[in-house]
Length: 493
Image (tube, rainbow, N blue to C red):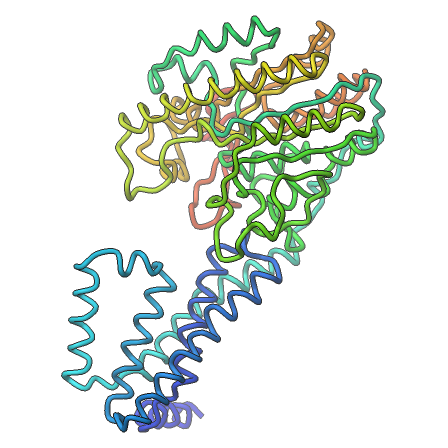
């Protein structure tokens, strides 16, 4: 049997037939498997599957098939394998690196033309060998995809269950709630510390004048926007292993989560207003009553990060239009953000710090304008300024943080996050003494609104978790314990 397979493979590789359809399929299939295995959490909708099947596989097959027919028509049969090889390499480069990167410089174009000349001049008839190699290479992303699908089908959803009857809580106070999330805004301890070296006291003093309570030791439970917010809106820890039944962080944040259910059961209208469609990339079922992005506004071939809208005027309009209802606003502001993500193009730790401080100042200006408008037009509302994580200052780029970090200063740079809340009365002090991390933010808020201190008996641990394997985000360790101490040495989760 082994010999028979080997003989058939030799016949396939050495026959004169260039197999254009198979060659095109090999390119498209590898690109499809590679893309989905590396981006599944943001491209897991049926629309994405249909689109990318067409984009990768059908376009590759059609392009190479048409080229084959054109060469046959002009009786250039002797050059068909060479031209197909060149086209396969070109398509694969476009798919993996992007057209702009491949054609982004004269050097890259010159290199490709030189390689094409070599293939033609020496009559390198290797398109079937390349197709066979791509099928072999596809085993790696296919295995990864099978693993992802398997985990989705077997992962437990038990972490989503609430330990008490918080879903049934009834509010005795019904102010409008504005949860403004300035991405990556570091807490005061970080900003004053040796890594950030920034005096933010002018803004903090302004917040105090506006009757905000500042939580200077607040920190996130997870290192990313997605993990932090999915835990926050479920009021539970997921230990970076939350995906199940083909739902991911975006589905949990903007979908039918416990926080939105509780607001709606208390007759609140819910609004999600964001500068970028980042949380909508995988086209989740949005459970908010209003979202400033529609699915048909997000090109399926683009990352949601690339789609931007200014939000100030939209927030004003929604406040004006909904004065007769009780409202919850989740407002996502992508400033200050954090230092650069990738090693390529990073400015180095010190320059990244300076750029981050500039963005802090811009975020402060926007927050002053936004808070002043809300206070003027909705003076009895509760305003929460709560960041999702820290700014990562001290690293050269954020992906360096996806490792086992041992320096407490760097750990706090990842997790130390801004929180300031305008409560409108002093009774919040009876409820918010243990408010230290996002996982407990809404439980504390609902306890306050319902005047039910029993809900505080089931606060989640104020622990922070970090990834120690960049190839598997479910592998996390307890980076900071309940007491705020670095806990990496003795607590693997």
